[in-house]
Image 1 (cartoon, helix red, strand yellow):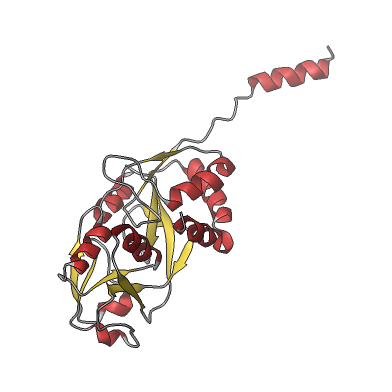
Image 2 (cartoon, rainbow, N blue to C red):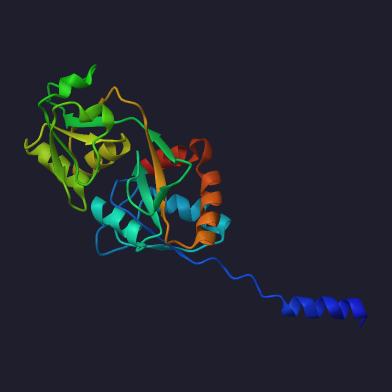
Length: 247
């Protein structure tokens, strides 16, 4: 064996093998069909399917799926590092030690879900909503365009707040349910056999993103972020979601 080949072999043996990135713990709250599940089982839904199909292999990391929680608990888990990635956020993040992704995976239009028999069939001005009893998720900030309207918000801080609010709507205990997207009410109306009418609100689009905990492994997050940014570019997930809704 030549001197140079021997030197190369010795150098390769001495060089430490590259270690795989640490697995990332993924968590969040239910916003079906993007995120589904119940407290005793890991998260499911369209986002999990898409991440495992388009991001995991590309990033070369493993994802550990936790069970869904309430909205406040999900952000607290992100702050403490109990989870590394929060699947869904929109608007400003005020949680210390948490950073939203620079990219988003879905742009949506806010809607109200009302019963088919509701007198509210269209909204030209948000002032039309003054005095209405509208259900939404507890632990979230009211979007700025709605914060100035005297709406009687009915917040629910439960794990499956979307189903609970639509059931309250069916019973006539509230007049409408606010959704930041049109996919959730369509999904739940079908699963609950509930006849509803979706009313588009004259508001700016909402952008859904993810968020990282500052306590997460930085190399793993960097790998995930690069792969996910490419996988979610150009409304690729929106096309996937439309097909997912047809299952």
